[in-house]
Amino acid sequence: NSKLSCMQIYYYEDELKDEFSKAKIIPRKIDKNYDYSQKTYLKKFLHRFCYTVVAKPVAWCFLKIKYHHKIIGKEKLKKMHNSGFFMYGNHTNAAADALIPTMVSHPADTYVIVHPNNVSMPIFGKVTPYLGALPLPDDADAAKNFIKEITEKITEKKCVMIYPEAHIWPFYTKIRPFTESSFRYPIQNKCPVMCFTNTYQKRKFGKKAKIVTYIDGPFYADSSLKGKAQKVELRNRVYEAMVERSRNNTLVLATYIKKK
Image (tube, rainbow, N blue to C red):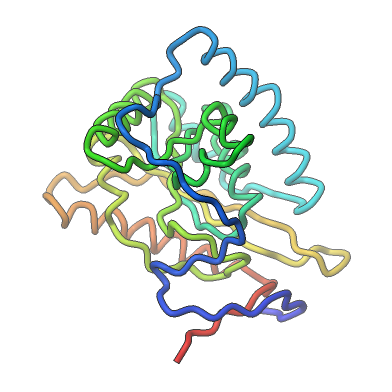
């Protein structure tokens, strides 16, 4: 990789748990009273307006102008037009990661599994559910509603997006060793998995980064395996595809050093 620019140095202890987001938000409790569904006419209208009329054009413009965003392998998603599916991606950019899934899965609507922080902001937190945010539940009753909503989205042939690394590491150019826990969702719903890998590459002119997103899949769970082994096997194939794509990074914008 070419170290043309180093914006920041980060020191970490645990690749699975360390968080480098600068946002300081007190998360609300996602309990049985949290309404995951958008069944009323008003909520359906707000989702369609916020997602299609506002979010998609804003996402396209922002990504093209700031990052010269390019998607490679989008033709692989044609197989998903008649099926709901899960999408997994690496988590390296607070702003872009909120927008790229919408561009990648188009024309399918995307619903993103998020930390409760994303629906806890004073103003924007009221909007994010209409943009497709599905916050992780905090108790058993909320978990039932959460699982039910995910199943409905897959039945409706939507895309459910998961960032398995869970925490943002800005401009990180490798893939962190995420666990297999989030792969229970596609197995439970018996549906395919896609993944994308965002890479930072040098532009032809200037030193700023462009983001190139590589799409891989579909991946299907191995029905000959059971329980944890099935989740681990599916996770490993997705992880290996993302690691291979991460080798296309050509621009280092941040350095990560493990604490001794």
